[in-house]
Image (cartoon, rainbow, N blue to C red; front, side):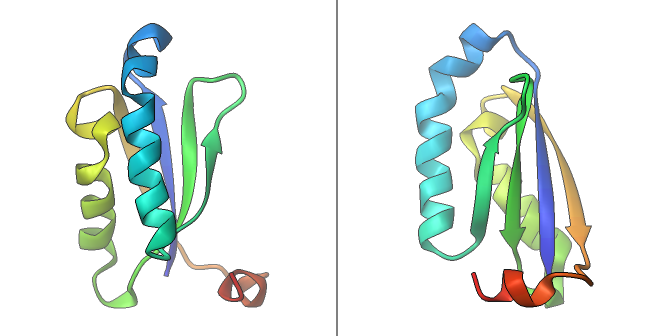
Length: 97
């Protein structure tokens, strides 16, 4: 199952910047493990979006884990919207990633 993680900053950008390096280090670990497919900030920079791949058998628990381990979340920098996504058109392309 694929999912979108929408991250919205709760603090001024100056406070976000203090945690950004830890957040990006965490994301690199997700990328290395094959969970994270793509990520980046919104424009204008009010948050970011992650495209992730999680196991089909316990989607919500996997998404909660991704959120809970992110420094942006546990340092109260951002709020998270976790959106499971059943890709119909283009799934073959995503599966190749």
